[in-house]
Length: 104
Image (cartoon, rainbow, N blue to C red):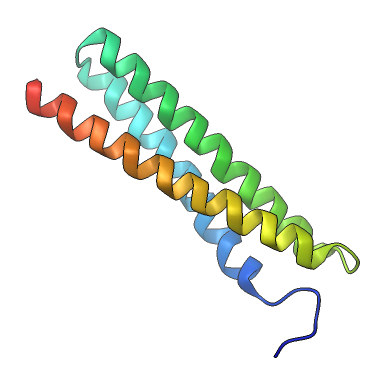
């Protein structure tokens, strides 16, 4: 069992959450370019924007956990929770996007 405050998950969360933030921004751009139904695309844009923010928070917490000796373990757990929330939100937004393009 690893007794260090930083178990290494942060090393994986940091680049992945940064990439997922970029994916959210890309999807927002694609939705804006396709101009799907105005009301639904605004909802999808907002969900992806919030999801990108959640991934950015996860990225920040992950980085901070690698730098902090005292709070590293707690910050790493928080980064993990935010990352899982972001993934869940992204799946919901992806289904919303798929259903919207089905009607387009």
